[in-house]
Amino acid sequence: MRTIWSTIERAVLVLALGAVTTLATAEEQTPTAVELSGSRLFQQNAHRLYEANATRHEVRLLRVSAAFKHTLASASSIVFPTSHSQVIDGKEFVLVVVNQASSSNPTGFCGVGEEGALYVLELHDLRADPRFSLTVQSCLKTIDLSSDGVKSPYSAISWNESPVGVRVSWQQDAKGNEATRTFRYENGKFVEATQ
Image 1 (cartoon, rainbow, N blue to C red):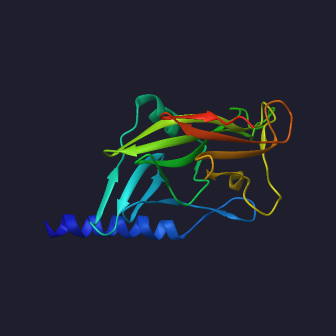
Image 2 (image 1 turned 90 degrees about the vertical axis):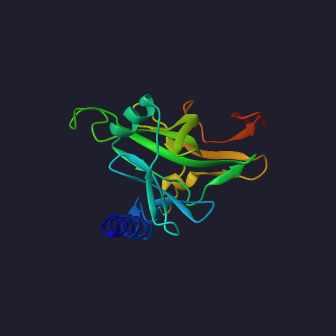
């Protein structure tokens, strides 16, 4: 039994230390973990999602749907735009951008480019369920998040307080325009707010 607790404590420590380090994107850093309510952390490792609770010395693998599991497994990178979750109507949500390679030919068109989709995941009962998704960047469709060259382009994705929801800013959206859009939480769904 002591060996099991020792292993769990080491795993919690590794995940907690990983949360302190950051992944470099541009000049600014992106979070490697998301702070959840109740002193918990949400992280990814090897294309799987985990919840770590240092107080209880637990690291738990979160269940996802088969389709989202495939999306995560084939990702070229997984990024957290914000370092904290958002509790809306008693439900806890996290923001995750899952990037896929634009092409399997590294010397072809968009060979090293990525197609990025934002997912708003609802966390409950050791599950992470996508409740909203949106293409936020694409080499193939020329969609770019806003960036000043210093901050991470993922800082263009944030929680919005009023109306409660998600805010995304693009340097160039799917229509080729500079745009900022808010997707408010309404009746259990994220819908685009009208200006």
